[in-house]
Image 1 (cartoon, rainbow, N blue to C red):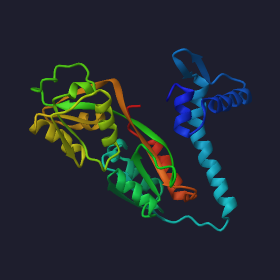
Image 2 (image 1 turned 60 degrees about the vertical axis):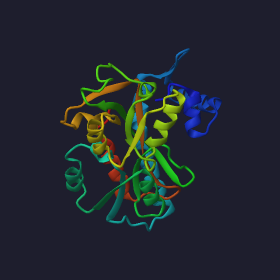
Image 3 (image 1 turned 90 degrees about the horizontal axis):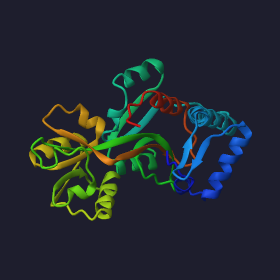
Image 4 (image 1 turned 30 degrees about the vertical axis):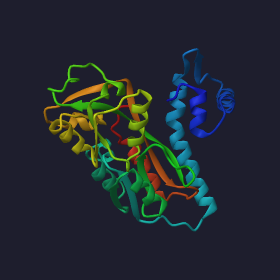
Length: 281
């Protein structure tokens, strides 16, 4: 994803040299090239794609073995509480819940929507075993891994001054009104940092509590909304959807309490969620 040993190292608190050594050991063990190196960065080969896909299953199997060894008397609970940051449910296939219930009839699944801060707290306090939230993840209290990448876009009425653009950047929002999710969502800091980086000062920043309201307010207030592309595409009102250049992505993570072994129900739910994602990766 990062196309850079340095950026990958920053994400996992490892030096670029440490990342390189890990990759070299993997390549030696598997007798293949996993990444092509060039001045433009590192790019995964077909063998790397195969390994990446298989590794998700390998890691889940390893965790399952550890759970059974460390606690042989462990009995999986039938109640599974899952927390979702608002808007993320739209990135699961329509028949997701019915399909999971049919495949796992003994699991009593309960899911609740929060903002990102609420999702973090629900997992932190043990009210939910698993949470789905946008980055960043607080690794001091959580274990987390990437679930999907969501492409974001700008939305506005067809009469807006930027409506004819092929693409937008944050600097284009200087002197304009924008609608974004409030500070209880992690995307808020992303927007504010990008605005500051491109020295853009919006005329008005409307802070919204849910993604669907961003679209409605963008039209009613003649403002620019920033929302997931999938949400914008599902909206039937009179709006224009414009991509960012370069493209803007939000990374969504699955989190659970640090060091706590997941129940079998939770592992099966996560695996099923991976198989039934709707993303613009």
